[in-house]
Image (cartoon, rainbow, N blue to C red):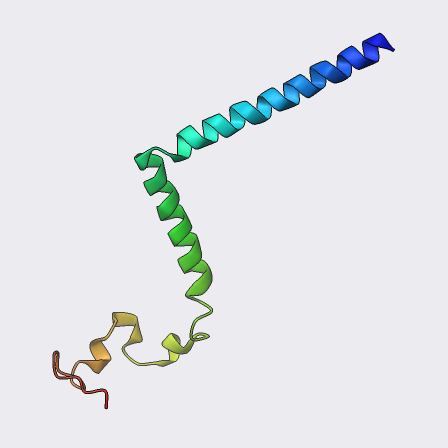
Length: 85
């Protein structure tokens, strides 16, 4: 019975120590500015990749000039003279 309790105590200590060390490492890793920039770039790319195909439902493929940006709208609106109402 004593061996079982000692084994459970050692396993508990290992689990607690691993969680504490992992938390400290994670905090120190993600608190550095270089790693924050990396994480932001990765997350922004993943969100853009997930959102952009769903916005418009492929409408941009059917519009002429959509592949080259706003080129097809150049003659319609002059900069600085846009009236909304």
